Amino acid sequence: MSDTRAYLDHAATSPMPDEVAAEYLRALRLVGNPASTHAHGQLASESLEHARDEIARLLGCDHAELIFTSGGTESINLALKGLYWARRRAGSGNTILVAEGEHHATIEAAEWLRDSQGASLIWMPVDPDGRLAPETLSAAIAETGPDNVALVSFLWANNEVGTVQPVTELCQIATEAGIPSHVDAVSALGQLPIHFANSGAAAVSVSAHKIGGPVGVGALVLGRRATADALLHGGTQQRSRSGTQNVAGAVAFAAALRRAVGPGGEPDPHAVARLTELRDALIAGVHAADPSAILRGATPGPARLSGNAHFTFPGCQGDSLVFLLDAAGVSASVGSACQAGVAETSHVLLAMGVPEAEAAGALRFTLGVDTELAEIERLLEALPNALARARTAGLV
Image (cartoon, rainbow, N blue to C red; front, side, top):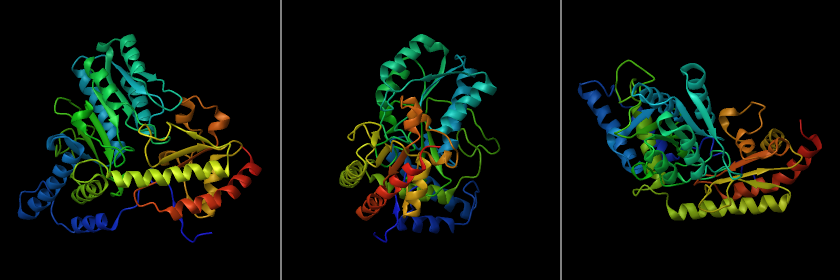
């Protein structure tokens, strides 16, 4: 077996490349609060705003629309809670429409609004691939009444099974009904072009560490015509967000995004083709090792993230496979790292209609632009023994 340890969990966090780390370290050494008016503060402010300009350009939004946050979770919470409160003050209804199978940051923020803020929460079903159909959103709006809906929220691409949503169609439906859309693009960033102005969304959430940036920095793109009440108060350093801004995090985020999507804001087609080739080799190898394995999510192609391969293995417990593969030098996951360590069947698979016994055998492999063929080979060497041992242990 190869000595190369395989890291196949880029959807949880992606390693920081050397050039990003170098820019991060340089920015960490800057002295000065970017809100200070002296020379040190203004130097820090220049670095911060240069990073904001670059990220905004690559995401297809204006400088003023980009709000730095502490990560994807804060971004999602600011979008859902802030938009809901602002819309309610403006006289909208109290209903929130959320697709099933969302990330837990969206689910728990929406449930908190329901449980403590009087929101009426409606879950919109997804199809067996994890896709929210435009007609499903249209029907939900028509049944509820557009005036009764405060906002709509859905993923750009599913963080577990990699299915890409018809974002522009969904946003157009909501916009025509006068309803703002929030789109969680955390998992899509770096693998798909994210152009805010073209999407039709009112708000889009992204995070740096999914593309090789630092943990602890993300952003909410909030359209100029959208209003979100603040979660944090005490300084008003940014629109809808108070708090001293993370200059080094912003600089490193810009460097990581520049590397991930290039000057045009779209992932390099050669890098995507290479990633797709590796992902397809992984899929073929898994099916050769276990013909009973079922690929979950959309068929490989434009409707699926190029770095995602998600399977269920009959007769296996996903957690057992993670443990056994880890011992063999392969890092993978059962799903979202935010739920790691929690004995819980994937809510995404259940929303897709997968029986609970089958969903228990879930395993997600996610690749990054620096993934090597040797890592795929390491997995395929280790998988047969892991499957045999997991099936001996059976389902708990």
